[in-house]
Image (cartoon, rainbow over all chains, first blue to last red; front, side):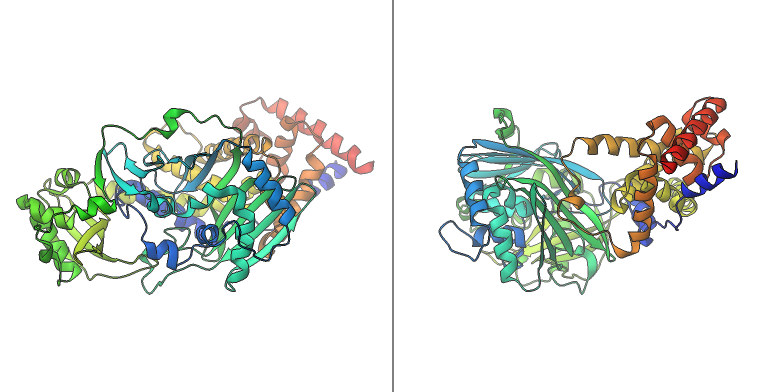
Length: 401
Length: 166
C-alpha cells in the first residue's frame, strides 16, 4: 500500500497549473459577442487599402512582391529553392486548407483572437487563377477580374486583376508557395525589426518570424484585428527534400501570451480542383470597383455633398439619405456598398448620437462611432469606417455597417 | 428583461470560469501538453456551456460535465493530431516558454510513465492521480461501474511498478 501511494505521488504533477491571465476575459468577450450578434458586419473593408498591404509592409505579402525570379538576394539554400521550383513546375495546382480565428463573412484579413477557428479553402491553379472560400465570403480570380462576394447577403465586389493582393491580404503569400521560403528569409534580412529564427531536423526546414504589430495604436480599436495589427510569431515548416510548404502557424501575442490565430496543417499538392470551386457565384449584385467601373461613375452625382465636411457630418447625412431614399446621395456615400442591402437594413434608423471620429492601426480611413435607434425601437452601436474616394475626394462608407 | 437575463447568464459564466479554469486547464494540459491548444479547448467548452445553458437542465453535476466535455475535446484533438506529420513545435525546436517549462516537464515525465498502458487504464490513472478524483467520481464521469474503475487502476499501478523496477 505504501508502495502504491509512492507511485501515486509520482504520477501527480508536482507544480501549479495556471490558465493564462487573459483566458477568462477572452471567454467572456466571446460570450458577450454571442449575445450581441452582428455587432461586426460583413462589409467592412471590401479590400484592404494599398497603404495597408504595401506601405505597412505585411512581411509575408510584400516579401513575395519584392523577390522576383531573376533577382539575386543573398540566400543560403539555393539548392532547396531550385528543388522547390522544379517540383512546382510539375504541379498543375494545389489546394490549401487552413483555419483562422475570424468571422466567416468578414474580410479575409480580419482576425479576432477571441473567435473560433473558421475553415478556409484555397484553390490555386497553374494558370494563375485561384479561389478562396471561408463559408460566408468567397473570392475568385478568373484570370481577368477578382470577384469577392458574400453569397448569403447576395452582393459582392468586382475588381481589376491588380486587386488580387488587396483582396487576399495576408493569404496572398499562398499563391506563390514555391518562392515562399526564399522570400521570407530575404524579406526578414531587410527589415531589422523582424526577428528571424531558423530550425531544422532531418526532414524539415523551419523559419520563425517575430514581427511587431504595424500601425498606430493611439486608439486600440483596430488592435489585434488582423495579422498585421498584431505582434505575431509566424512559423513555416518546409519539406527538406523539395522545399514544399508543409505547415504554417501564426501566433498573435495577446498581452504578451502567444495565441494561435492561423494554422495550416496540410496542402494537397496533387489536388484535382473541381470547376465548382473556381466558379464565380451567380445571383449576386456586383459592385463595380474596377478602374473602368469607377471611371463610369457619373460626374453629375452630388460628390460635393460629401466633400469638405467632417466624417461625423458625413455619417449624419448618410442616415438622412437612407431615410429619405435620396438615391443620388446614396450612390456617392455608398459607392462601395450595396445600396439595396443598406436600405433594407438601415431605412428608418434614427441617430441617437455620433462620437468623434478616430484613426486606428493600419487602416487609412477613419472610424466614426454612433448609436442609432432602429425602427423596432431597439438601439444599436456601430463603428462606421469611412475613407476618401480617390477621384472625388468625397467620403465613402468602407465598412462597419 | 431579456437584457437582465443575459447579464445574469454572463455573470454565472464568469463565476464558473473563475472557479474551474485552473483545474480544467491542468486537466487539458496533462493530456495535450501545450498551453495554446489546452486553453482553446477550455474556451470552446465554456462557450458551449454558455450557448446551451438553457438546455442543460439534465446536468446533475456541472464539474463532471465540464471534465467530461474537456476530456472529449482532448480526445478529438489527439485524434486529429495523430494524422499530422509532426508537431510544429517540434519541427524547428520552438522552445516551450519559460513560464510553462516546469509544467511541460511534468507533462512529459508523467506521460512517459503512462505511455505503455492501454488508454482505458491511463485515463483512470490521470483522473485519480493528476486530477485528484475519487473512484466514485471517475466511475460517474466515464460511465462505467466503480469496481471496473478500481480494477483497471490496480492493474495500471502494478504495471507502472514493474516499469519502474525494470
